[in-house]
Length: 259
Image (cartoon, rainbow, N blue to C red; front, side):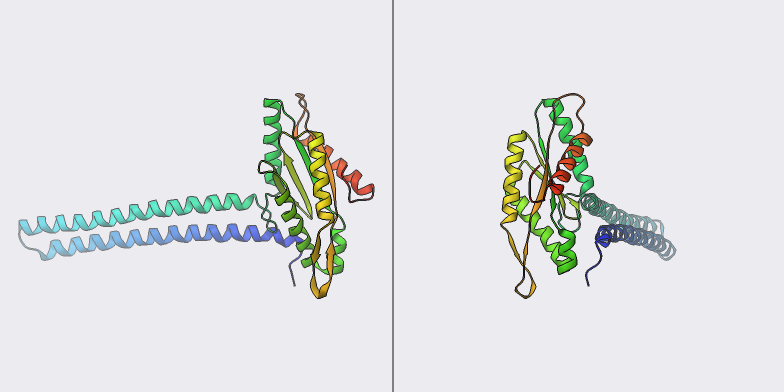
């Protein structure tokens, strides 16, 4: 049986915990190795100084032990450098994982809000318009209840694939959770945004998703479109509010439409 929807977010948390545990364990191993190596070098120095007679023999013993200790230090420094690079990579992986939706592997709501803020600021600075499309799968709850959560996940992944294939390379697609997506379209006015939204809606309406026992899933989506203004009072929250209001109108207007 698949986990409930709220458990999907736990996958990312478990990934973080596992990565942090590996980082801590690697540091513990290094510290233990360094302590043992230092104790071994000091013990060898004491043993050599006791056993080697004469002044020249003691000098030779000191030089040999110093060389051994330098080798241990070099090895330890190299381990610190290598482990530091690994930890930096692990930290980068954690940061990247934090911004991804566990199911779709698209940017999640947090990443979307950050990019929307940045795009709004850029559009104000360079005086251009951009479009925001918020897309929601129609009847996803019914699909989950009738066919099972696996069918709902398949519907979400199908929408992800269609959206990712249809947008331009400069556009950004995000998964906001519960079958809702957002697409940011830089340098796109209301006409261009509506054309793309309608093309996405029509493409998903024509998709038939094979399911178990010869059954098929039919998909439709509702889209809310908002376009940024160029005035100084524009901000990301207002643009998102307008897009979500249009999405609500599309839902209440019969679904499977762009508003």
